Image 1 (cartoon, rainbow, N blue to C red):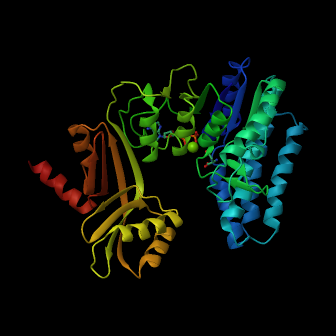
Image 2: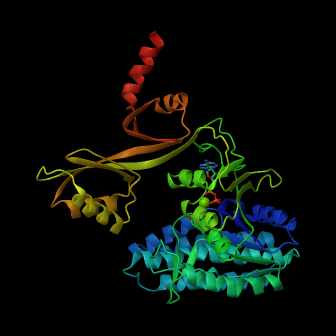
Image 3: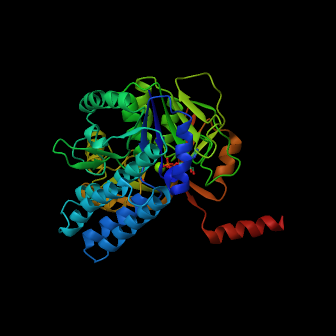
Length: 435
Ligand code: ADP
Ligand code: ASP
Ligand code: MG
């Protein structure tokens, strides 16, 4: 049994759904668990619905209607009028209307999950119905019957034992009935049957959860790129595809922000030695990238840029040394507020951490620590990570940047940088052109 995952871009409209169906035709004799995301940018659109509902600004129903209409237009391109799928999708969307008809919950994250899950629920219904229509028998599975989480809404923590029991009980009999079982990425459910989501971009992780629990022989995520590249093609030219990567390398890349794979995806696969293939849905025959156990491969420099970072410069108010008990207080606070520390450095009386710039969490952190610590926040920064760095790569990446702090540990270099202000860049260019 294999697990395939198709992201939002791969099913963003009717033509792309047909393309995915074309890919699956080639696998029709194999048992497959297929995990899909919401179509295109649906999750972003639903986030706006949630925000409007919370503000009660009168826009929520209109925005929700737009989401429904987009899906209806796609269904009209895929199915004859009167197809059963119209009712089934309508039933799901109506559940969202019920949430909008009530007053917003005080718990924003809870309300978010009850509404945003609609994206995956309807996309999975549409894709499964289309596969059945073209003669690929496909069972539809509600991922919430399998993926058990705690009640950390918007970032559900998977309860592995329960999830494994559910998966092993429910999925294999379905695979006997239909070769394909299609389900949603991104969503799970609490013990009280409330919907949770696993964090933005979490569908890759869902596919890894299914792969792990069902001992899949392999997992493939189908993307709009030829495979994992040595840098983000949206930021850099001349990227190269990595044909093979070790789990370790993939974990390092994704942990530091390579957006091609959700960071939580690799570990569940590594623990069971399940290979992960990243392939292009635009060129399904091409080889892609294989991520599996360690090899002696030599890697080119691999660059990951994580934007929107902040440095928190922390010092003690009483000028005492920054010692272990202070660190314990600060890390506990960061963990409680779900502030992820990407890098840290300390001197005798100060301590600096690099964290994603989430203003409301940082404000809470500064406020809560203010009795003991003075904290200066510097935002608008980037964290650049280079694996297997070479002097030339470092030079190229430092162009036009001011390096605020850097660290090298064996194969890895991290730099926190900000752009040289435009006015200074101009001066450098002018000086350069004179020479
Ligand atoms: P999905 O549709 O599965 O959610 P994503 O859009 O999240 O896919 O991920 C694919 C995108 O990741 C690519 O379009 C590419 O722009 C971006 N990306 C960032 N870093 C890399 C990298 N190192 N290699 C390949 N793609 C990358
Ligand atoms: N639809 C969700 C998101 O856009 C999950 C995913 O696509 O991975 O974040
Ligand atoms: Mg994604």
